[in-house]
Length: 515
Image (cartoon, rainbow, N blue to C red; front, side):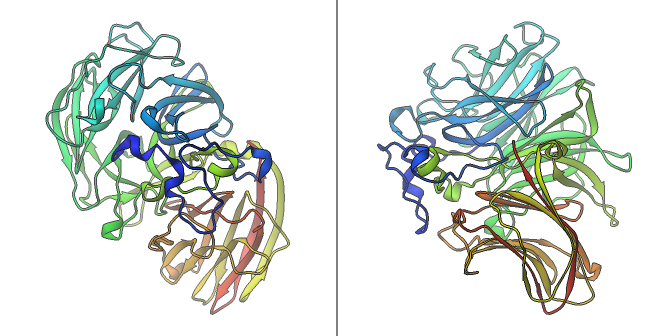
């Protein structure tokens, strides 16, 4: 992904921590306080980096019964200096809720090319690259000395635990452009070749290779008006009605156009060379402010069989507009939290449009530590609940005859002045973080919105709350809002509210988790 002066961004973590209510962050030369000196803001059931810094997720791959999840990691985040920049760190998981740290897999600064940016890993089952059947191949962007971005190859013969560079020359050199990064490689079994998508400013480039070491440009998909395209994604999925679609995705900053700044996607057709979208404008897999550099990957059962009708997805719960602003630096010595892994399916709307729907990974059910069943609750105005917590899931179905809005006040302070609001208002669903501590010092990105049809007079909400985040899934998960927020740990209250009417919050259930 984009790292505008990547080394500068990853050095001196305290520089961006400008929110007045945040705990003081260390200077570039300082060390974080010991965890025993203050309360922890580390997420309870979301993936977090063990220490220092993380940003882009890299598409997980399946090896020997577990997912190998790589991500960009900077071990020198708190000290900065000439060693700032990212390597690939590895965590493994069988259920995508509980992860085991495996340390650095693709190191940085071991060649003259410097640090390692985003890319993708594949398992070369047929030995097309010549390193042996089953070798794990990584192709990632590097920019030696801050210069031209190009694609380089690393390989692993120990099931993806450690990687060796394939020389210091790129397998795909830069053709003379500024943006040329984030290679995503898939296997085209039908045509016996590899296909790469590459982020090239407002274009996603398509490339072919038979051996992963030599690549040929074949076409490009161009979309302007939504910012620079990054971290492209390409996959085929079967819809609930049996139809097959190709999906092209990319992270994009659409804020300037009044659009999300998350994962844009198009459904369409792909003939192995050219992608043809069903519509020119994208849909968005998340309408919040903080689901960036997201990747999707294969859903497999315990035997490794791929589910053709579903994929998993994970995103970075942060944004480059305020990437260094977080209370986890001071008390926990890290900056880097991911969204919950979600299961993505392809659905067909009544209009005939195909769209991706999301729901939290099913394995969360296996990590429930406590359930609070509140049943049906009638609300007219504001109704505080007899529950307090900093990390939980709440599900409810709100029904009404006539009202303007309804929802929840999350992480509510004792005096009622601080809270995160989530729900529906007139013709949109929303999450609003304005009334609590949050990373947006500009005040411009406080309420995220997605369409809602008020004539339905009912809405199902599934909301995941953790110490520094809120993720709201609306109805069947067509619309999701992922948002960073930093409430005081003492703000643990919860209330229901309605505006201009009465509603019943049916089957209201709270669950807590241990990862």
